[in-house]
Length: 436
Image 1 (cartoon, rainbow, N blue to C red):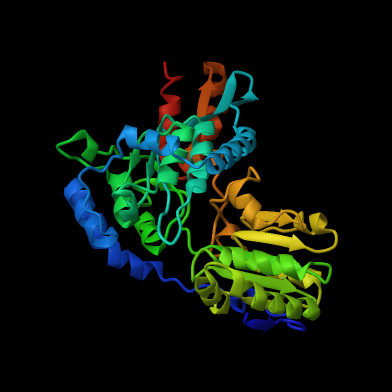
Image 2: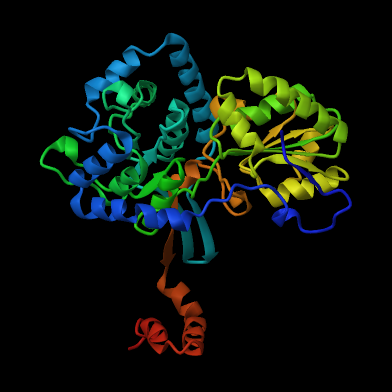
């Protein structure tokens, strides 16, 4: 079922040899550009037109009524409520420890620099609603923003025909449990444009004030809109299809490995599931397990498409040292390590969105209730980007305080550097303070 890539004996850079979904975001940008520009120019009317076209819902108002959010929480399945509350508790515990404290450094006597950590004022949190709905993503977006001290939290999620044109009721219930009451029934590129540019309308329910930062996963159209809005607002990342890499040796249980590969393939036909192993016997056993488990899973067609696609496969390596080099080159959104001394190997990984160590920490735990965040970099972006955290909503601001004597002591250096860069007025600004 899985494509096989044999890197045994190879000393080539593995990056060009590893499976990866091929998505051209630049093409998607041109496809959605008219939608984004229309929302920028026409606000509510353009959002309503795009929503009717792409979601099959004609919006009477953008904002979800407060009573609908409250009702969703009241009718939520008790087991789902308990699970969401536990996920919130664990996520809040982890993210509370990510808070930053201001630091003042005395550079010289009379001269200090303080680094203040200041939250952005208003954020837009996108929650997908296509092949699946994600109340857990509400938790993952909202909790770090709240722990950062953000004042204004806005959730946008696609309207569902099955829920009378409102976002999924479980998404609304998660908002209620977290105390978020500004929710918009808007999805796709038009949602990102609305969050970035705002929306004017005759009625309060048609208006949305622009945000400062947009976070949250989405499909390629959401990603393309984020690229268009980058600079107008801050964004967390250009998220692509989900992915899992598993580094495993002969000690791994093939049932666990197969089940974890399937769990990510369940998201999307473009989801990537990659096994990296130095054990051909394990690879064969996992293939056999996939044959049994895929047939028994609910979304078997979607899973089969993902597992047989060019983005998924088994990568055979000589040993775990080569395996580490391969997973670092792949830079997976989710990386599982199921080997001897798994933690020791995990601490040597440089590139991954999140690492799941050993047999008892599957990715699905992180998706819901580990306390970690599941909004993570994809498409190899873990080489340079981090997952969503409290830090995503904070800005460091340097506050510089110098006395007259402290400035006088360094004035000559400032003037020398200003002259070296042919910017004499910079030096003059210092000298003017000491001219008689």
